[in-house]
Length: 427
Image 1 (cartoon, rainbow, N blue to C red):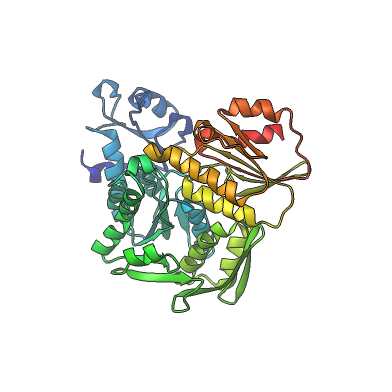
Image 2 (cartoon, one colour):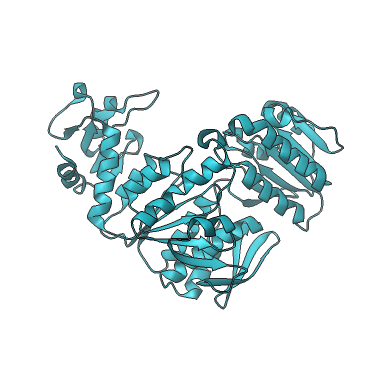
């Protein structure tokens, strides 16, 4: 059975799933092999739960005419997604970057949804499985698709662009993320720029922050839709940006008071404004959309617990995002500040030096309490009043049980594997 035949069956279904726990009536189930399981074994369960068709790549689990046997279920999922994208022919905006891509994606979605029926990547389903699932969630009613693309090695963005075939692209920034897989910062730049290469080869457009010199260089030969806080010769000029702690932006004759914390979020908002402007969303609707967006999932959330104000940004961390968050926290006009930061993962041979750089930055620029959690921060312990180092989270918990935080402003940030949101249980 070829991809077109499989697609003919797929469009008869209401949803696509790779997880039998999320199977609904009339769904299309694709059995993907994982490191610790073989989803082929769940084919019959999927049908019993309401799947109309199941895709398998192991003939031992063939059931009846509702079973679609293929050579490789994952490749079939990816090929089906590409075919479906070409079948729908809707405009697609793709975005990637080292920091801020999920927040930017959510902002773009709320802005464009004011005028269009849009669909976007759910959560951070942005890899070789998540992107196909996103594309397969688009329907004939979808007017604009928004696809987030993540990567931790070379050629991944190129592969995802080949599947999604985007008409527009946006790269938030190039930073020190996934250095281990990319082989350093230059590898990050090369890997993320694969999106620009696709857009150039296919005569597509790109949204560009003209305050980022590297983005300017990488997009010189592309059709650019631009924004800036400095250069007035752009599509959207941003008159003023402030943050204490929430970002306020003045542009296009409107003032937007967001629920996002820190100047590092300003360009995420500016990109969404620019994309909304390009697609002719009315300015007041852009304002309303951004002001209605409240971050969640441990991303730049402002919380209150007892007498303490907490900035929770514990979804992920890399040296670039850690530095800008710390810079913003230092500048906040708040008393009794405390930093609680955890190790940054996937930095490879540069991990110890990057953790050392963060410690040195705080050593030189802060006069408040700093709590460092994790083995790589612990390996860079320095003797300084109000600096505390803990090798594990469990070691830190022992300390937390004896601390009483009152009237403090706390920043909590670390890589996902550190799960530093657990600190909230002890405040």
